[in-house]
View 1 (cartoon, rainbow over the protein chains, first blue to last red):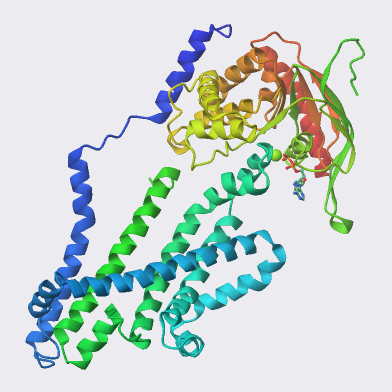
View 2 (view 1 turned 90 degrees about the horizontal axis):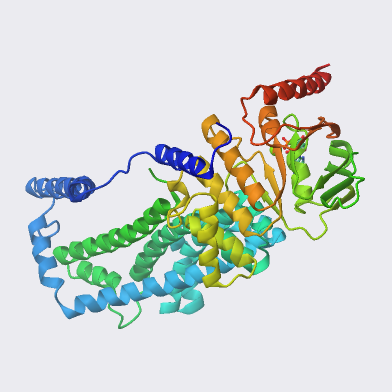
Length: 289
Length: 256
Ligand SMILES: Nc1ncnc2c1ncn2[C@@H]1O[C@H](COP(=O)(O)OP(=O)(O)O)[C@@H](O)[C@H]1O
Ligand SMILES: [Mg+2]
């Protein structure tokens, strides 16, 4: 009865644990393939619908074919353009700008985020400023950016950073604000303070919110960059935006649409990367079922 | 209150005239008023009281998380650790990582951390679970990890704030046995807060009953039954019902 030996107790504990954990759900390769298919078919269907609708509009001859080419023409143009070196130069130039701008925005957003989260007096003032900035379409900054930096790379970067940094700062601030109080108490009991508290508790706890901030910040950065490349044409720099402009100037509708598709693809690919990071994090934390 | 007068009695925790007021002025709330009692080294004391009577406040004062408003708390050179109702494990760390972080904050070397966390997992009977994530464990297992983390601090005074309150009866029952074993093996001093009267009697050498608003020591009940006890034994039930009567009287005093 109560006077059990240690062995009996150990077995009881192990038995209860096994019952509570339930049977292991193992996913074989079949499950994996089904999951992949489940994730893929909506996207395939979306492409089919868009291309089909497009083809219908072309067939209805709503606009002349040289203005609105059929999907097949644009596809041929993509196949012709993508393997060329000049295409990759444009993509690299634009992605380089995106990376620089986004990187700067991350650095600045983090500094602002931590400063605001740490110092209460900054909170009220800068907190609402950040929210205000987020509501602004960043394109309105371009005239001012051109005044400040002339027609230059800096003008574009300036606006990209202004567009992205507030979201990144905001993600970090709300992550820090919503660290559960019991975790903070545990940190206190374990003797965490100062930098160690941030390193071992606050920053990791704020990570999911920070990642959402990064994702949103990227979306703003990418939009600002495209607006910038159309408005601020730096001489000699053949960016994706410049390609779009030139195609329009030359009435090259297939080329124009080909680059629109490229812009779409870049957006989707980067979004997939952020979503994957977000999902991996949630799985590790046990926030998904 | 009951001060050990025999010579050689060592106290792990001494509370003397402890008061705690939250807030100031008209909205001030006297949570604890003139609470005094001693806990002997190696003693298991259950602290019992209605919800909101200041039990959690008392533990955070002893743990040094909040300043006192009056009185003194003496834990001399004992290391104190605190466990909550929620395991509050960090989801970004593995089970072993959650224990190792406690060791790390105490400056234990990396290799030693590995080894000691594995040993602590053995103590709470979770050998082999070190690489799991907290969310992969059941509630009772998580609470045992939290216990291992508290033990990792090398505390000899363990404060527990309704640690099994969220668990089902069967799991709780088994964890009572486990806690009793660990308390014995490691010669801990335990202050165990609960609002479950039977749990208090099942575990404690002594039950300290707190009044509500403000929290004062209402009465102390020594529990003289031999261990190990069963929560459903007649002796436990008998003392528990006497304490429950006392608690009922205290609660209904506030209804008037
Ligand atoms: N940080 C706080 N600020 C103000 N009042 C508090 C705070 N913490 C607890 N209290 C109040 O003190 C009283 C005792 O709380 P607590 O110690 O949590 O009680 P228990 O753990 O016994 O349920 C309650 O009335 C509660 O509302
Ligand atoms: Mg409480």
